[in-house]
Length: 142
Image (cartoon, rainbow, N blue to C red; front, side, top):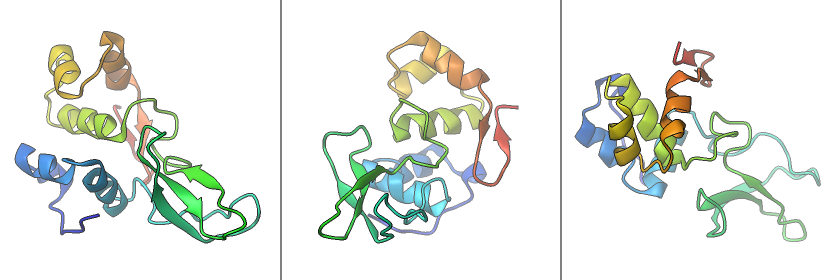
């Protein structure tokens, strides 16, 4: 995954935003750099091991999950566990795009449904009105 210096999110242009979130790998790297997803989970697996790595998994929406490195164990955990994204059924890229467009004042339902690839009209409405707590303790949408 690419690592690069980020401009402050508030000052990003649409082109810069698209570069940071153009692929799933870039999106995860971006989320890690702004502390929305950890670089490694802090809690051990249910067998007490704390030796995680991020592995590809085509069966899940995010394409990646945490996997215990201990050969006999190999338990997995969602990269969303304990994060801002934990209870969302949307793809991480969709959530980030919704937040970015909302922060830029580009928040008409038709625009959000089209550019965030939302299949239902009420999904955009729910995300627009639902306050979200982010890792620094602040609340989005209030």
